Length: 255
Ligand SMILES: [Zn+2]
Image (cartoon, rainbow, N blue to C red; front, side, top):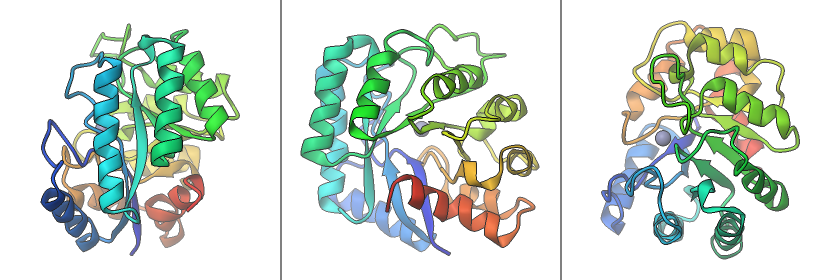
């Protein structure tokens, strides 16, 4: 079984930024069949509104992991869109041209519908990058001013049909989130978020098709055996499992 993990934080709250820790993480991944990981960065280490310098530091740590294990890590550029178009453009260009990053990671600096996202999506289009948006159902959280609900991430994908968007956290998005994601071929959902819950992945495959779902763990917040288990425990065909665990990500990231 070959697996691509589309959602990891190899450096998390400063942990994991040493060569020995990176080696341990790669060995842990390989032991579980993970052949590649998307490294999204230590996204909340400086709070929800990192400065330009703090974004650079987060992205430099991801770049360092890539240098240590170039065949293993795929880098995503962590941004704070509220810093404005020039800051966004500058950091994306730096991450792509100097570090070979393949995507943009958005956390909770702003809602996915905010006007500042225009520059982010323009940069994604210009550099052919995938946009991964942290998403969680806001029905009970009430932070929608800066925290994206599935309806907001779906709105972003609908508005930019030429950019591939990943709606993070299937379990956090819930059944309603799956329904919000319908009818948008450029919108993918990753399987991370919260504890495994029976039936939700089965429901997502039934409503969206297995082609729209990517395996993601949110490592080290969630354990790999548990996050792989949530896919193996769903009622899927072998072909659907392969798409979710590997083939969809290989195609999306042009591996
Ligand atoms: Zn995450």
